[in-house]
Amino acid sequence: MNKKDRPTPRLKKPWPTKKAMEQVYAMKLWGTNHADFYSGEGSHHPDIVGPYLKAVKTFLKSFKTPLVVCDLGCGDFNIGKHLVAHTKKYHALDIVPALIAHHQEKYKADNLEFHCLDLAEDDLPSGDLAILRQVLQHLSNAEIQSILKKLTPFKYVLLTEHLPEGDFLPNRDIISGQGTRLKKGSGVNLLAAPFDFKVKTAEQLTAVTLKEGRGVIVTTLYRVF
Image (tube, rainbow, N blue to C red; front, side, top):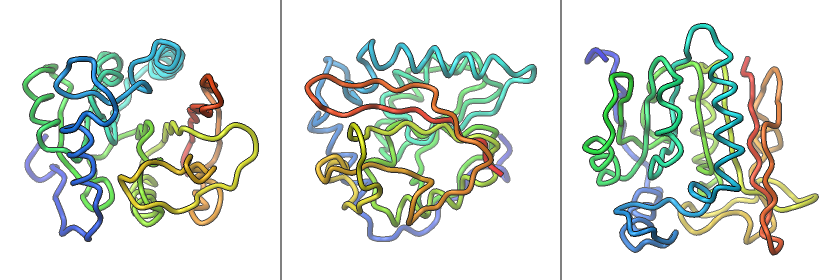
């Protein structure tokens, strides 16, 4: 990437996201598998990860010319590491500096770059597909609004969210880093108010219902205008 093409950090608003995410990993609040960084069951349980990787790999391999992918909130990279080989370029972003430094040392590929960026405040790399896997569910509505403005240049957006089962009132606001909307019986729906994200098509790729009434993890592919 040329210097002029690199994302440029901007001044931050006083959102607590960065400190909250640093605390999550430092205190292993999402659990541990004896790794330095662990993004929780949603990024590791075979019943969740298997269907997701199968669907996304099928989508990526359907293109004659591989896509440039931006993984917005790459977490511990247990998912992304399986997708890099099927892309022209893979930009993996996260807000936690120590996490990104760890990945830069551990994962090497000619078409792979890691960036420490705040999705709501910093410029994003350009690409064809934006992946947001269980990221927005942790953010306030204001931050989600800011991120959505940056997604319109992408051809596709692949969104995964942990949602309540059945009908629910979408998009109840939360403070970033303090759990998800599930505690309010809510979840993120980009097509509903206040976001009203405009897309050409929406296709559900996977839906994994968790045990003990813990909701459903849904992955939707949006084709953007």
